[in-house]
Length: 593
Image: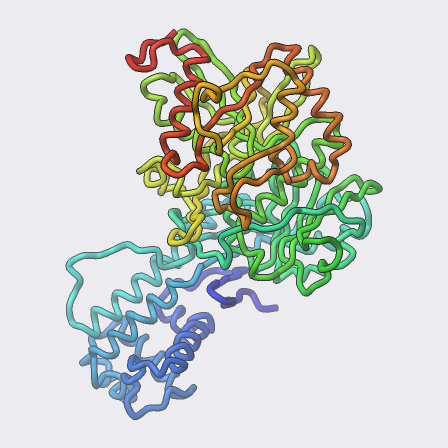
């Protein structure tokens, strides 16, 4: 059985390891992995008829000639260019024009680095997950050092000079995982086939990472269907990997195809990776991201579908393996759709919104839930709170950045829970400099395009699932101007009035989906509730009645995020007004109440 492989798929280089890494330059340059990258690079240059190939001289760049090139490069690791021909006569052909050879070596180094590079450490039979730091150090760290060292030695021996500035750019892998097969406690024989897919146990990333997705917007809805996607697919172990994630109180197994590896691995910045004790339990849901072929087409209006397997007590989500679905938003929102659907089946209320606990001077605190659709200004208002924190706030704790759920305690009081440990934010809507302050932990998607996004951790999982009594529930209104009739924050006087506004779900689209203009969605949450509208109506009526019964402040907050010119000042004014309502008596001077 082959112990390790390198696959180049599109812009991805995936190294599967089941043995020790190359430790010397000779081993690396003689490996089939290096030869694959070299051949790939040469084919690219040939397709462009690149002048960089002129260093081959009279030698045709066929297999024998490339073999000679590899041997020449191996000798250049140790010896200066004028010495190498005395050791290997055929090297003279490549060393006639050192500038051209140096240009090719530089291109080859950059060509390798232009890939999104991943290492999969297969832990089967050798429990690498029990010594993760050592494993990562012996793979990703060693590979980085080896590649960079080989490149530098070769270039210095070609040019006869040393750089005056050394730049420690990432040269190995950008993401690495330790994975192993796990017998997940699925109920139902049909699910046992999923246990052939390795499950991620630890991850290492080298942020900041920049990922170019084929798509930068999401379209359509996630539709409930009456056929189980598991019956329609076969997962080939070498092409799939599983990220077991804890979404709030739920365990969801996310299986993603190698075509979507860069997106699947990015979940580590958004969702908590489940531990071994979690994997002893039956999962609440599973999600197959990258279903091959067209087996999902025609099952619903959109091919982004999910199924409720009531017999086996599990939800199943599925999205096709096509470029138009290669957007992180699809991955995130399907996971949250599964979460929300399960929450409703349990009789609780999901929300699309941000929840934060604020501690003011004098130990006055408030837990605030801001509900609203994508682009309504929820995360941006949280960001405004962060900016104001030094002056007005003793402590700010994020409980939910985008989605969560509400339960009623034994006294009927609303208790809020989150789902994610990270935030997936639009770069355009952040305060200047904020994203740069988090670069050391961030993954950035399509930075040069509209709807450029950044994902990074913002809270602890223990905080997400602790359960917090809610004091304020606000609908994020991003489309209305402020005047005497429309204050920044408007309190509702009845559950019926509140339900009308929340149910309408109006928002001025910010370009995060393919929708534009003023749009409406049921409770600003297309991720589950529209598929269970009857059940959700009963849940919402019960919960909004409890909000008013327990004197929770329920209203709407006009962030004006959808109005040009107010992208930063709108959420900031909303945050300041909310601080006044909570108890800051003098915003201007910063005196606290």
